[in-house]
Length: 101
Length: 150
Length: 277
Image 1 (cartoon, rainbow over the protein chains, first blue to last red):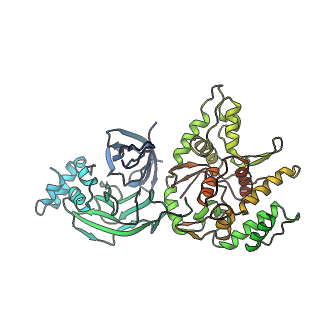
Image 2: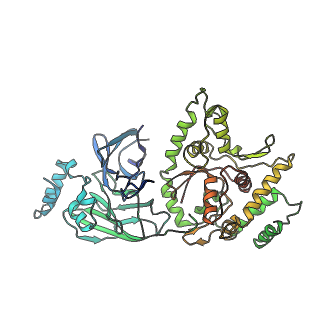
Image 3: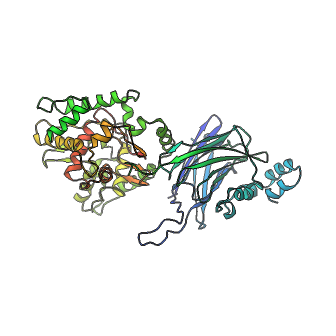
């Protein structure tokens, strides 16, 4: 099951997108109960594509909160497909697709 | 051909625009340690934009609370009426001040909302890259700890 | 004890006689009136939103979080847990219906067992009746499942009943009421001190929320916890903050307190799960 939740709604030729990605965004500074450090592990890049082109992209670090939230808006309409993907510092990736409402 | 070397060439704004159209993916901001694991915001900006000169502008709209409810989850919004190709955000007192850089391709609104972490009261700055220049808006966000929130 | 409560109520200008004539219905009306007078700019139903009903700047941040609230993840997890089959083939749906939209039925007074039943207790008793181990009471799966159930129950009226034919029910309500108005802990605070007398004041960096509307929005994703938690988790946390020994989650004290506090919100609507500071 994808870690990415997307809400995409058309508003007069623009698509308002809200996306929440489940990810701990570990800073590498937190410690386990036994004192060992929890390794850093965070989303580094996010890309949003629709109609074959990239409509939004972002890169970030652990200054972004746990379960990263992004909202943006691009030219599009109801029925368009939107795909959001992320990549993290360990090379792990995930993606999710939705149809604009 | 990366954007940095294009900007350094003299009088080549239009060439930069052509280069963006030709190689969109290569010009998009991607995570790099040099930009994002850097205690110096000037170095981060150099890495991303090939320069770090910024000008405050009333056209950069920054929404952030005066007092954060919780420093771990601070909602912020940056928007501008300018034609922006990138929007960035930085949290001055964080160990690595640059927090996020977003690409605004043609057809996408110059607006980003996200939630950031801050460990203590800090200045935050929104940075908009438009026509080869960087524009900013800043404010202070207070972070308080302690009380009956427990 | 009654003198202390009468004294506190007197200070609060409620002027209620704690004799036989006053009852829960009058208590609730006076309670609600107190907050309506204290915060005249807050629409009555808005008290369901806790401190955000009285603090505009905090409200802005809360509304930004509500754009895509962290408890949505809990609701999804809860949905899965709610419908997953026990070893005997049944699931929580067999106890609470296809969507678990039963928030409005709790807490209630169980005449047979002579106790207050909360929704969390009902969930775990369903599990145990079907041979499953109960969840913990404060966080994790219990909070995910009740988040799902509360979400499907949004809008249900808060209408806690105190059956008139069982004096033990009224006694439980009165115990909860006494808890609410009794000072405890090293800091010597009663719930009423911070959440009634000085609701809306700053305690160091936190503004205390009105108790009217307190029980409508559980379970809650607290930024501070970075996780979901139940009402009893919060009760215990609050008691720890005032340096009092917390009671056991789902024990008599907190169940009766929940009974009283929820009754005081009769007339409002359940609006959980919620995001809070």
